[in-house]
Length: 330
Image (tube, rainbow, N blue to C red; front, top):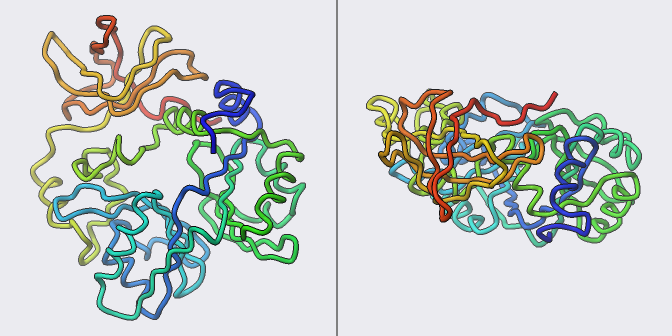
């Protein structure tokens, strides 16, 4: 997927918010997890609780290290009773596979990344466009999974995405993926690149691994405590998370907006009352708000409405702590 197509990131972003955009996200990894103990292996490896969902549903969850940092954030597609597909960030696919192999039981994690393409169609008009290709797509609800017949092949699709908009992510066999992409574009989906994918997820305040999540940043610090099912008997990193919940953390993720159009950037220091208090993890220009927005690690006692200063090469710029997400889909 390119940074942008000829239409440009700004127009691709607005197409997703007003109509529908299509993304080639085949760079994501895919692990097919099977076996009689697959359910329990996932339960003891990841933070969320599969008992909260059922087969035919998808779930967002984290793989932690022993200190509570996030090795990766993934989406789990629960296909059938003992069959799952897990989508890690591409560079972490092997780490996730090895973590599952720690479980002593009948569980098999196979990397199937090179056997499929993944196409995401996102936006308020996504469903209408998908229906033009197959009515079966319209039966798949948010965070649900379905099988769709296409060109004598079986596709798997889930009501998930990374834009804050409704839509589907479709896992398609390689021999029909290009044709499916072309049909969806001809039906009205606007091709969008990595640039728009990043500005869209930032407006929706969705974390990016390596920025808001990392081996040094925990779900608690990233304001994602809901991803951690503390009621489970055990999972990797649970003791560290219990300690953070009990004693508190020294930093948490907040949103800030600037008065101008200049985009804040990752790594820029944030000061308050002339004292450095935090750092930006992700920042950019918001096409919908027409100002700079950023996610930042700040002291936990920070309040919405607080004024802070962002330090850059051109001096300092005032910003305001704001509620998240930055942009709410109506």
